[in-house]
Length: 164
Image (tube, rainbow, N blue to C red; front, side, top):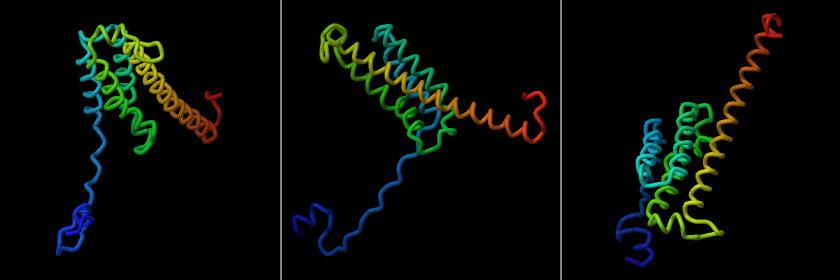
């Protein structure tokens, strides 16, 4: 067997067969998304300052408001991906990195741009909150536009009446 065959995983005397790649895992369910945020809230309980707890709770509330609306965003939309990734990846990774640090170091030692790890975490949590707020507003605008369009349709179909 040549070195190339060994790298490519070919066995001598057998034709090369490419294994079919496994299908991607299904997207997380609503319950899994909620559970991911709840797990973060449980991990920080008693271990993080109130400024972190409040921000994580705010993100959790935003996610809980948006999960039932994910289907309106479209399966492959960047917005839906951002909501799911925030709950299952971005939030847990940021919080867990902070929690791995000794509290005194995390809360008092300047580590980057004149900020402590606590300040950096708060900035990251604020960014996630702002991003979720923008996505929520965009979805709400779509719903409001649909309501306006439906009202226009009804007014045209049945006359202006009380819709004026």
